[in-house]
Each structure stands twice: as C-alpha cells, then as structure tokens.
Image (cartoon, rainbow, N blue to C red; front, side):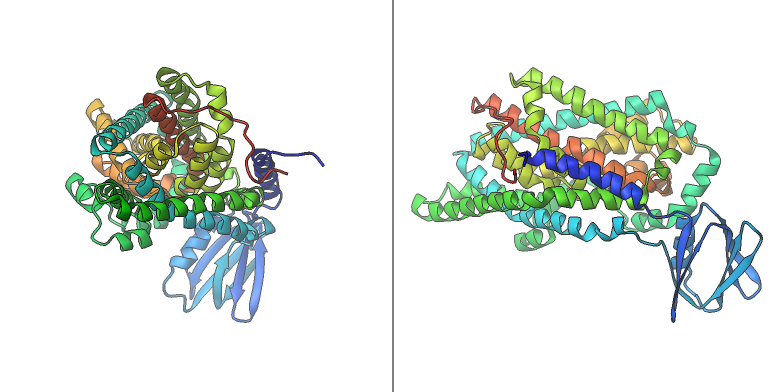
Length: 501
C-alpha cells in the first residue's frame, strides 16, 4: 500500500469532499413542508405564496427557496397561515397548518457533525495551548527588555502586513469596481434573502472605541476570559504571568513553569493525534459547505468574490514571499512546502484558533523556530493578526459603497485602512466574526450597514479563503522574528508528520 503524507491525504479529502458535496447538493428548487402529522416535499414551483384567509401576504418565484424559508420563519403569527404552490402547468396546491418550511437535507450535509467535532477538538486545545505556551514563552525570554524587543518586532511586523493587505484590497476594489457590475435585480434579491441575517448582526451593536478596546484587554477575571475564549485577555494575562514568574525565586517559579511546559507539550501531542482524522474531517466539512451553498451564489457575486480572491492570492503568494526574501534567507518553496498541513486545516476550518496547534507544531518541527519564540509570536498573531480578514473588509466596504452609489474619497478610504486594521485586531479567531466587524468599517465611512446582506451569501466560502493568509502571516512572522534574533534553526519542509501511512 502506498505511503501518503498527511497533507496529501488532506488534499485528497478536500477534493473528494467538493465532488461529493456537488453530487449530493441540496436542490434549490425543492422544499420540505412539515405538518403535525408528517411532511411533504414540493419542487419546481412557478409561484410560492403565503396567504391569510383570502389575501396574499407575499409571493415568491422559483428561485427564492432561501427567501421563502426565511419569510416563513420570520412570520410570527402562523395561525390561519396558508401556503399556495402554483406549478408551471398551472395546477395549484394549498397547504395548511404547516409547522416548518425547510431545505431537504442530503447526505452531504448530514455528514457535517464529523467535521464539527474535529473543529471543536482543535478549539478545545487552542485556549490551554495559548495560555501555557505564552506563559512559558514569556518566562523563557529572560528579562523585560527582551520581551519588549520581541513583542515590539512582532507587533510592528503584523502592523506592516495588515496595512499592506488593506492597501491591496482597496487598490483592487478601485480598479475592478465590483459594486458597479451588480445589476439592480440581483441586489434586490440578495437584500430580500439576507436582510434578516444582516439585521441580527447589526443589532449586536458593535463599535470600536480605542480607549474601551485597550481597557477591555485587561481581564477582570482571567478564569472567565479563559472560559469565554477571549484571546486578547488570555494573551495579556499569560504574558504578565510569564514575565513575573521569572521575578520570583527560582525554586518557586520552576514548578509552575514545568507544569505549563508539560501542558503545552501535551496539547501539541494531542493535536498530532487529532490530525490523524483530519482527512475525513476535511472531507465532511467541504462536502457540507458545497452541498449547502453550492456555486450558484458565486455567479451572482462573481466580481466581488473574484476581487477578494485575487487580493488574497496576491497577499499570500506575492507579498509574503517578498517579505520572506527581504527579511530572511529562507527559500520561498521550502516555506510553503512546510505549510501544507496548515493551509489545509485553515481552509477547511475557517478558524485561526483551530489551526493554531497545527501552526505551532509545524513552525517548531519544520521551520526551525525555537519554542520560546513560536510560543510567544504565534498565539499573539492568532489574536491580533488578521491580514486576510482586513483585506476582505476593505474590499467588502468598497463593494457595498459602490452598489449604493457612494463615491468614497481618499480620506474616507484612508479611514477604511485605519478602521479595518483596528477591527482586524479585535476580530476573534473563529469563523464568521469578520462579518460583524465589517459593520464597524461601514460605520466609519457612513455606508449603510444593512449592505452586509449583499455579501452574507458568500461569506462562508470567502471565510475559508481569507483564513489561509491569516495563518500564513503568523508563520511568516515567526520565521522573520526568529531570524532577526539569530535563532532560526534548520528548515526541514518535508519532515515526517504524525498521521502518515
């Protein structure tokens, strides 16, 4: 039996998952109506109407499956609600006393819990790993000057890549002008389909106040921060704990440091074992995404999606290699070959936090980064460095502004640069949060917040794409900082990884 590297199996799982999801995709012209005594499916309707007594409340056409589902869910008073389905041959059917209107799930979607368990396992590891590795990392940096030096380099590098990422996004949005290429019919359809989702996110009333942001980094209760998975507060607490561990007598500090070293190493071993099932988990995650969302929505938002993907591609495969060449002597091909598992896990999970254990393992074992630097730089990067998200927010803000006919001047676009960079710092490293932070960016330049309804349909797919540069930038920073300190070891991009067979 041939021996496959883990990354090869993950790629195979990803490809097979996409094919499987496409084969077992949810039918966009089919609905399941549930009643108290059973259920019935309807498909290929010409018109789908909601009635109360003899008056028509709303009528939808054959392409409005999602809007029909959302309209039914948002109808508070379902008493006396009747559904009328008119088919292309002119026949009509009436349905009463319905309790649910839903898509008909396929096996492609039903397998998703397997992938969800995989993501939850990685997320389970992320918090104790960040806490333990940062405490050990800060404690190993010997003195406050050394910590300040490493921290300053890390934050400076992340700030540089973030500003460059946002600039790339704005340039592409100005050149391609994706918002000017959307027709009014598509705009109206998307607003109808996703306005309720947009409203729920807007109602979260997010805002960006620099003073409050800085104040909230300091946890009132570090255990609550750990329980809530508040990474910024965890990072702050862990760094302080590590810094002052070395200020107390060694006989008291050593047992604590040894405990957290053991915890960190345990989490790394655990992630290596979890990664054995990664190919199967990636298969189910990709299959579910393709089966549920398909590629139809990409056609409607083709220019917007292309602009984001082109920007992320330039960011990952042009900007990062240039920075790698500018700051180190590491070969670009070796760097990316070492990142194969990181890329696959980041893309399939859409979570920097879930990918962190894999990133840390790869940086230490393949990229030659010392543990004390990796354990400091990577958790910090997972929390504050979101280049892909920042680029996406810049493009999305410009796209929505263009659709609404707003002509943003240079000052407003510079405001987007600043706001998107700060919003990216405050973005939790979990799927979907970037969309909420986008509201802050839109507010900063006076673009209607409800415009996020235009892009929600492709957010999940683009979230997968933008997570890739998020985590690659963390690895890049790790290598750059280690090299600047003269502590970068041997690069072994093809080193064996647990999970091969």
